[in-house]
Every structure is written in structure tokens, then in C-alpha cells.
Image (tube, rainbow, N blue to C red):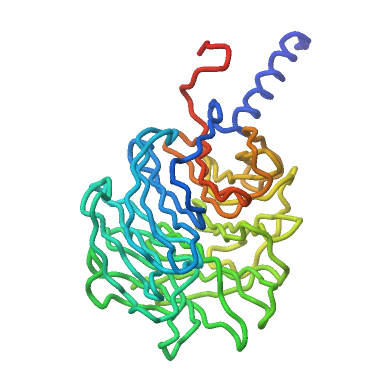
Length: 393
């Protein structure tokens, strides 16, 4: 007959708890916040990509009526304590986020609306010191809103946007498959969804599943009102999007800022969408790869406004979270996010206008954000190798 040693039992429990806590958390790191040197103009929107060495590339637009400019800011270090900003051009008024991707040779590719056009900037160097541009949809087409950009498996761009006012499909959500690296050809356009009368789409997110098929999440207005519901379109088949399954996965409610959708696809191909529009933020957990049914999972300890979505090992969700005077990143302990833990840093902000969230190669959070009051751009990052305030590692 075996007897239980109380000390061994306690040690076993402690090890188990420690393992659980480690699994629930980001890798060991310390949060650092840096205000990015963008000049004196107020900042409107920002998107971020991470280079192979972990340095952020920030693409932002100023917010000046009829004098908006688009800037690519190449951070010189991980914390973005310094860097070089390159003005890509004047884009007039701007209503939504640009898109950014980094090619295998480190050259950025950037999308933005400009004078009502859908403009693609192709940087000729890694720093984007110079660039060329082409208008994939011409000037005065009424292009606006978010313009996400991804690279397909062959390196060619994939774009998502609302069909222009000149199109017979005006207002429809379009996936544009470029057939060359510069997107100079006509490409292939697929209509993912068409809004009901008086309704419109907004706040687009785009990702690819393991087969290279696009998945898009976005908001749909309740007629001409300011109430929006979440919708998802899932492509399948070959060629990509030969079959499209579109489902409204949440009902219409009023909006909060920032009100981006955020989307990931898990290892079993089931999409997961962040719903951050309400006082009860939640993950919309698709039951199948086509997301024909969904379970709403309220976020634990949901203080503050969540933003962005990424996956940690084990398909555990992670996202940024903003509350008065605090910027945080939350790591879910399991795939359903029943609980978890966060890392945070105190800031002077009371609310944010816009932001972006990524995980670096070490699975540590990186957050770009714009203060709603000052309209300044900051980067908050969890770094592994920093000096603590007492001067010891």
C-alpha cells in the first residue's frame, strides 16, 4: 500500500500550478512604451508590420483636412526609440487604415486610398526611401475604409476593398488576387459579399487559411443606421474562392472606438473573430471551418477596450487591451479564453483612436496605438532583454 507524502504532494501541486501559469502567460518580458517621433501633425490611422529581425515598420496617415499625407516609418530598433519616416505622398482626406506587407527581400508594399483611388506603393528599398505607385482603382472612385493587404504563397499581393462608385457592384466587398508581384496586370477579382439595400460594409480584416484561401471578417450596418453586426466570408476550393460561405455571426449594435474587426484561423481551420464593439467584448468562436455556426465567448476580466487578435501556441488567443492610463496585452490560458493573464504598462492616455497588434517571433506582444486626445503615435512592446529600474537584469 502506498502512502502519500504531504511534502511531495505540495511540490507536485506547485509544479502543476507553475506550469499552468507559464502556459497562460506570454514569455517572460517587460513592457516598454515609446512615443514615436512623427512631428507635430495629428495622426489619424496606423498599421504595422514586423521585419525579420523584429523591428516594426509603421505606416500611418496624418489627419489634416484635404492635406493628409501617408508615411512609412522604419524603426531603427525593437522599441522604435528612433527611426526614419518617409512621406509616400499626399492622399487628401483619409477615412481608414492603410495596408502593409513586407516582401521576402524586406521591401515594404503598402496600400492606401488616395484622392479616391486605391493606390499601391511599391518601395524600391527596405527603408522605403523611395517608392513607385500605381492606382489599381482610379482617382475619384470613392475608395475609402480599411484596405488590408496580404502576400499570397507565390508572393503576389492580395487586396480587400469595397467596390468603387463607378462599379455596377458598388458597395460590394471585393477580394483582388494580383497575378504578378507589382500587381500591374488586371488580376482576378472575386465578390465576397454584397450588402442589402441601404446597408454598407466597414472595418475589414483579412487572413489566409493553410490552403491559401482568404477569410475575411467585416462589419455590416443595419440599413442606414450606426449599428453594425459582424459578418464573415470564408473562401474554399481551387482556384481560391471558387466557393464562398458568408454568415452574419453577431447582431447589430452601436460601435466603440477603435472598432476594427480582428481575425485568425486556428490549426484546425476554424476561424476566430474578435467582437470589440460593445461593453461585453467577446470572441466569436466558429464551430466549423466554414463558420456556419458560432459560439460567443465573453472575454474574461474584460476591463478596457480590446484590439487585435493573434494566436499563441496551442491556438491560445492573444489581444491588446486599453483602459484609462494603461496599455496591456492579454494571453488566454486556453483556446476558449476562459481565463488568462496580462502584461501592462501605465500611460497618460485615457482612450485611443486607432491601433494595431502583433506577436513577434518570440511570441511577445507589440502594439502600435494613437492617443485619442493628443493624436500622438506610440509603440508599446514587451521586450525580453531590458534593464529593470533597479539597474539589474
